[in-house]
Image 1 (tube, helix red, strand yellow):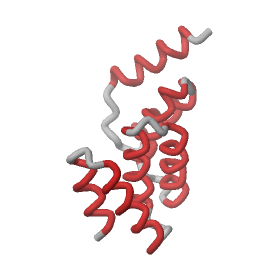
Image 2 (spheres, rainbow, N blue to C red; image 1 turned 60 degrees about the vertical axis):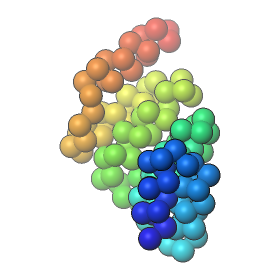
Image 3 (cartoon, rainbow, N blue to C red; image 1 turned 180 degrees about the vertical axis):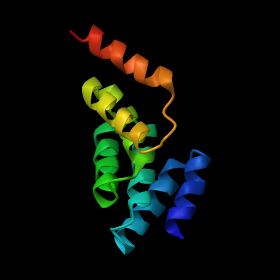
Length: 116
């Protein structure tokens, strides 16, 4: 129930309440990848990018085929300017069947090229 409540609060941009529920969900059962993925999204939307990437990574460790978590982590890497890691994760998400927008991958490739 806490993951669901957190998701509802997140949809309404009530990030403090969402974070509270995701933290409770993780405390009750630390093996639920959705809780980490969703908490990572809250961290991302509150500009805590390192924390977001850490939570997406935890979600992926718990479920290595979690395509959405790979995509979210790709997005999380962008403000950290980790473009190669973003590309790797976007391609992995795509390989797992997640509908990664083609322009996302192209923009990341341009960022990599401009980084040199």
